[in-house]
Length: 155
Image (cartoon, rainbow, N blue to C red; front, side, top):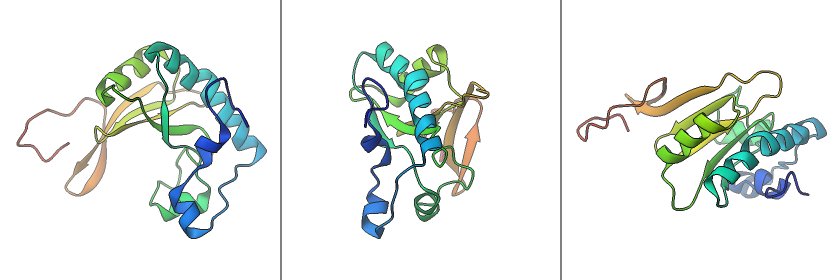
């Protein structure tokens, strides 16, 4: 099933964890509508800006999958409002910058300089720009970019 011109439901529901544990990761009709909204309002406009495909690393997660992988209990992945993405041949910093400047979003979180978590909430978008880093073994969310000190444990 196509969610938008360039995105399918299959790429949002694929989960290695669900496959390994025999978990049904099929979204409800309401969650599917949220995925359509995320694709049409945020991901398609972003794809037009970057002019290349966007890879979905993690999209929809059932509550069971989300709990199993250690996701936040209130994760927007559960409601179909978020995706973790990368764009081949583009740094996460570049992707984060473009997303926060040019597309509607609820949250755009550069997570550990590895991927971009981007969400869309049709009711209210906070336009948050955040950085997720490990500090003292725990994830912290910063409102400003972390220092690029090579000796720092924040990365």
